[in-house]
Image 1: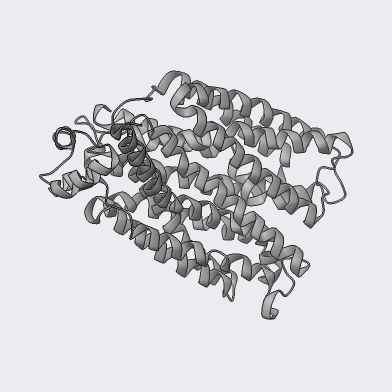
Image 2: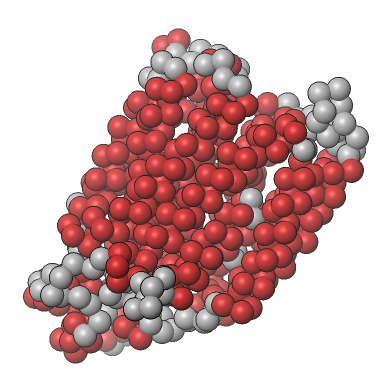
Length: 466
């Protein structure tokens, strides 16, 4: 093995290490948003909350995420990507503690909003940092680490919910030290939140940010560990594509004639569609959904854990192929698959007989078909729109506007997430599951045409060529 090959492998290992540390923000993003899944029913009972307040308890944190995402880019451009990660870590920790000690529904919502700020910040900083620290030939796979971390976070949160609920008897029952099980569900987030802050303090700052700040010797040191070779030429290339005379501003996203740049609109479009296909209904409400169609609490949580595992496996598929097949083909395949599976679920739920409470009843083979189709839907999302959206958002904007444009696109993603999550309980109550999945089917069909007409392939391109 030559010294050049050894050095290249060393560089690759180093990049994977720092990208993995940044992706811990994605893990907490997934954990924080999904941990409430197993506690929804217990929260409603503990705080005597109706369906509207329950929906707000789940989804108001998402508005906090929108705010966190919107301002994260500005903070990251002013103080650096690493410091922004540390702030997010502190907010995650405080939110986890507070959510577990909440005394009422509004008190609980406040703590969840605080966590939402951290989730929003992590959703911007991690993909930007990973894209800025990755060689072009690995950027798709390393960018997909963000989604892998998110789905692992979701899975671990659901697993914690499951074991705590089963050990206690239910989410409402006392667990350790006589404290209600649902409170412990939120406290399980504390260790990874602290670990995220510690990891952030151990990784280098983004070389693109360092060049923008005029800290070129530091940037050269980081680049030598990331790509090796002639780092001075790379620094000169970066220097031509970053703003050094002033900090980037949101006004940089506007055209001279007014209105947002077309590339920003495309980023917003892909963010909105990722949420409008209804994926987070599966992860926020799946235990409630499966109980509504006749499954027990234990079986509902088991199904939810299985779905989380499917999501992890399919994200690994995306990591394997995103730099080989490209971003656009995966999105197209995913859109087709989601349209078919969501349409099938809409038909099943829409035509199923109703029980006395008005919930669809799935008997025999119909229930099995619904379960298989739901997991196929997660599979189609997991290898396409889940990871590829974050890869594109991290790389599609040029160096001058990346953090600001990513902030706007991610903020709109959280607004869409809020709209979908808040609207689901009332739609379920007044119109039924068939209508809800009919709306998500329509969004999936629209996503196919959006990709065909507006998304350009970015596989193998340098960030400086965007």
